[in-house]
Length: 261
Image (cartoon, rainbow, N blue to C red):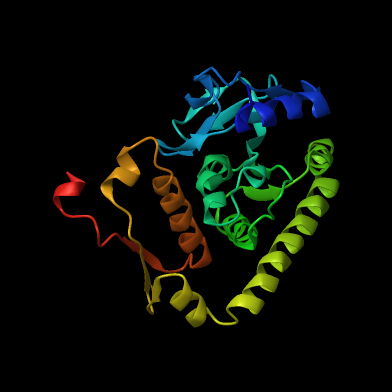
């Protein structure tokens, strides 16, 4: 039986990085468990002010270092440092905006002031450059840092640098430059201006607000077999972080008022 994407990622992390590194303990749950859906420290879900942003696959913590969780303002005896959401999507046909659908999983950690990592295991397809832009602008907007990576050697470098401020700052600075350049190269080639971007991406830009519209239907958000709902969430965060200074409206013309009840 073929391994699931989550199981591949979790096994790879344990095999290459072990259960502890540089004083950090790895928290990871078996694929069959639902524990990761619980709020940290009982699980691997992070958020702020009572709003959760999706469960992660792994987290590295410093034990016996207190941390106040901004989700519920409770103090935990262990302090999370890096939370990771991983996928083998690049080997499973995800070449377009389907790559966005897991972006919000690590976002809760970033909003909590941690380092959030979205790990897309190298495969047949490339990482969409827009993802680098989303992570870069989220890092500029939120309390924590969001990183997009495609290999565990880079993750190892991050974890080894975690308690050395100058080394960690340099790593993050270099990664920010890399992600921004990847995004900019794509933007300059495909759009050149935000007006062209808006035209191609079903977006309307106004002075103080921005409108995005798409053909989502109710079943995209209520049927577990549908992925369009997750992609819609990813597209929402793409728009939100590309235009952080504007109020954001998301329109679904195919949905009726009755669909919202």
